[in-house]
Length: 387
Length: 189
Image (cartoon, rainbow over all chains, first blue to last red; front, side):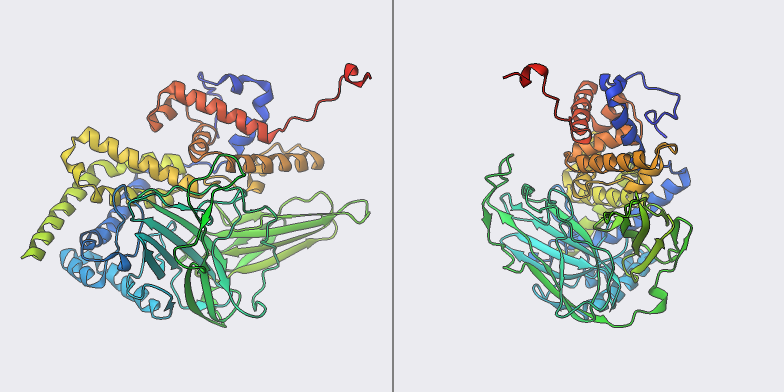
């Protein structure tokens, strides 16, 4: 609860004139309702977080010291720094680190497992990449499956570790590091489209999908309108996308990207001049093998009760809980009109229970899908003909 | 021999980093968590900050106050980066935001309110990352202007102006002005 939502007695004495103004009350109240409430962490929770980060930091120490030994072609990029990119640890260096702190042996074991999974992939470029994992936004290790360096510009593609199964949700992280001495101007997917729904990562296959999600993800919002990102020397840009595996067999993952000569102007037209993608016309490419049957322990159970659907999040799940839906209903007057909507993408859920969206009509049809990277996408629907 | 020297130097740097971490990590974590409201994301960003610190050898030559200032600046930049790449970071899904609205709304009013929220979310996506953070700190966390100013290391007056301008920008997108009715004089030939 905040001082702006009408439930708080401690009204600020530093309100803006607009916040006093009746005409602004509606937007101020809406803003105060729109954010995930930040719940204070206990001292123990904070201490746990700091301890966890310490372990992860220590696990990256040898990577830093090895950076001088690795050439750019081998660099698996963890993230940006003010000065240099961080190269991740190689196996040889990790062994030395085990001698340094025995407690981190588990890290090496996980690294070896993830490294083995890399063998499943066919690398399009930079076959020397041996780094199995990198830190991600959800603390789940991702496998680097492709990396390429051209003129000091390194693009890396990392995904949820395999093996892979039909219907599984994949987390994909694409990182672009500018190790050159001049600014680079990448457009989509590194700079979001005007409506934010540009996928940026494509999974290609022939034929029809074997796993369907009855929810549209195509959004009519045009992708143009975004200005290129200015990526300065030493800086990193990255995107994370979630995409389900809808076909078994060999799938090709591509990361097409646009590059420009400059940042462009504030006006939409004329836009900046595009230049050829330095990583080739297809961009970064990798292939994975997808098995037909997903193990039962990778399925996510859910229940629908009344207006609510609740997901049973597996205890081993570390990724975010994702939600996509569509909702449709007819007009009350039976005049043939209908209303339809959805979220056209994967939203992250703060809790595992979701309420059915409202609809201004009858014969409501709600289709939904829940997903966690590394687990099967769970699809469901709920129809309410008497509403 | 060269390898040994490098190892020794690295281990010395590790000790230095650990010490730096012990001194500043708790307060930096609290600082980051306050701005992005996700424990997991805050951990990731804290890691990013200290990875950056490891690469910045000159940091060890600074006094504590400047070290903290440097770390906070990097942390702030990382937070802004996160807002840049995730426009609606820390925002509730639309339907959950609507659930916090007045229960007594009629179905029609609820639909209209939903449309307004969609416009609001779209408007927030169009803000600069710094503006998104400012709005979150003010209306998501309910921070005072002076608290925001201290957190962002800016003068309160600057924060006040930025917030005022941002609120105006949001309102223009959230409640677009209806075209005004032509006046009687305009009807006359």
